[in-house]
Amino acid sequence: MAIEDSNNTPEDNCNSRRDFLKKSGLITALAFTPPSLVAATDQKWEQRLAEYFETIPLSIEVNGKKHNLQVEPRTTLLDLLRENLQLTGTKKGCDHGQCGACTVHVDGSRVLSCLTLAAMQQNAHVTTIEGLSTGNKLHPMQEAFIKHDGFQCGYCTPGQIMSGVACIREGHANSREEISEYMSGNICRCGAYNNIVDAITEVEEGGKLS
Amino acid sequence: MKNFQLVRASTTASAVATIAKDPTARFIAGGTNLIDLMKKRVAEPDKLIDITGLDLKKIEQLDGKIRIGALAKNSHVAEDKLIIKKHPLLALALAAGASQQIRNMATVGGNMLQRTRCPYFYNTDMPCNKRQPGSGCGAREGFNRMHAIFGASDKCIAVHPSDMCIALAALDAVVHVEGPKGSRQIPFAGFHRLPGDMPEKDNTLEYNELITAIEIPDNDFNDNVHYLKVRDRSSYAFALVSVAAALDIKGGKVIDARLALGGVAHKPWRLLEAENDLKGKPATNENFKQAAQLAMQGAKGYGQNNFKLTLTPNSIVEALAIAASK
Image (cartoon, rainbow over all chains, first blue to last red; front, side, top):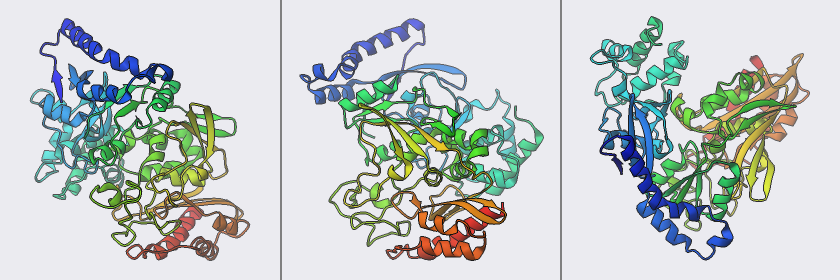
């Protein structure tokens, strides 16, 4: 699905880009050629070629670390994180945007990584659950989830925590009702909702989030 | 998901030119519906045109109207100070839709183009005239609890899923689109369509046209507005019935009224007759009930969704009463 450049040296990045350009130059040229000139070209051939070969160079920063990758257009951000960057803290629940387990922050905004194409996140800054703690020191939201028992099986927890942090930063944690409404995109089938709201309320009231 | 080619458009003109050459290509912005449909193989485009780099995100006050760029995110519009002040009904409807994560991704243009959530449309093992014209409608005599009570056809009884669009219909928004022949404007009432014999076509947009903005004319519906959404759980679910209600009340009398329903038809269901009936009358529950009765003319249940025949008028009265009491 995606290949990370073996070394992240600038030269290698140039090489991979050059290789890509060699491969896709023809495709791109065809795609943007005026219709009269394309008429003689078999469009289907162009597309089959594109589908077979095309990977797209992607420069993306995840938890402060820059990665230069080659990704297939169909790779979701969730699969990129889990399968290629081995960041398996972000969970695949439904994979259809219904459960919130895959919630991450992209450029500071919480989104569903299962419905996000990685190739469209050029130069984006992504934060996952692995990026919240500082060394061995847990993030205040992580500590609050432990203190308030904000989980049972734990599968939805990374998404809940990422969503909870964003909920406070957005200014949507001013009452229990508001927290419930703005956390509704994160489903917990164990039913730890009350404890999750307790945890978010404590972090909000403690003013521990910058 | 089937693999596809991804190209990035740098201008509206190049986006339109690219799709004009390849009718099977699709634009992608937020992707919250399209990627889901592609994973289910309901949509299988060979090429996606990434339009997120286009300069279509602004929300601005123009002379006598507010213009919202097609790429403005749903959460940005819902929380925009100008929108909250001038069109609180739109802000309420947006906040009632999806979850904050999805609102952070979804754009105004994409929201308008989202497909129905009818389970037969999503399940490729089932017949569905919208997904595969001529294959039949599984819902008419099947699981149709969520389905239409207004304007359905023999071919399709699916409902339009957006909340935002219900408010936009009530507010007389105008859709701006760009195509190979230039730009044109589509009044909101003429944007989405009823299923008729062509349920595969949700709206009147041509394949090679791109939504660039919506414009909402200024109005006097600043205070007495409400968006009531009745659903199976209190948040993050599609509407069984939703009501966008806006009243201009002066001295206890309704000067002007707007009413539109969601969750009951293939398009946002505007209630012009009920609106006209309310005008000039005192804002009382009796008058709201009469308007709701008028609104229900022509409603038809299909079995499991018969409860909507009662829920809908009750919701209209409730929404109007809450709007009037604000």
